[in-house]
Length: 290
Image (cartoon, rainbow, N blue to C red; front, side, top):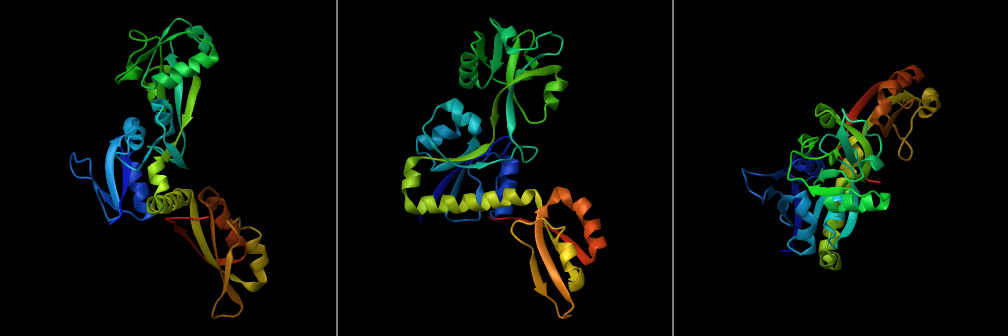
């Protein structure tokens, strides 16, 4: 049987990645310290790996494809192909940032004030390149962890990953600049993309994952509308294409079904009711495929 060897990130992204795959249609279960979780698809073979190492495993053809951050792909310098962007993180559907941060107690307000200083980070290569582009000569040291605790004794500044900035504030650090924005990407090696079956399998998987992500910010709405008020109701409805309007057993009424952004529902439902919609039902979505 053909199999696609797929790497998924172990660590902070593992839980949200498993949840995304569940919405897309795959059940993945990891037991104990195993790096080879169960997946209910005989055509998939999943390996868990640190996001920092994923590009190397893909480049070396240990696995065909993998999910990791574009930050770690850039940092590694590995020759892999980006197949798709998947914008999600540990705490939400958004990009994350690598930021330059310094202790709040210092009066440093710009990158140039760090000339000749020590910067600790896991993202060494990207940081060095960024400093060179900014024409700032500073020492960049690799941090093995607990980077936020190093200033001011062990480093003058840090370049650290942040999603909300709350951890930096808790450690009395302030953001001076943004080094890089990052999001999860699907990467593959050229051999995988040259194999017709593997490429098709990977593309199908990406389609469903992107559909699951798209559904995160949307909901379905259905309602009954008397035909004499239909125009008023439709005028209120934003939709991916156009709302579905279906006849009901009562010839004077129709069923209206649509998909909209969840953030507008709170204000929209009272307007729909006022415009004449009845029996309004809001329901969650698993996937939205364009």
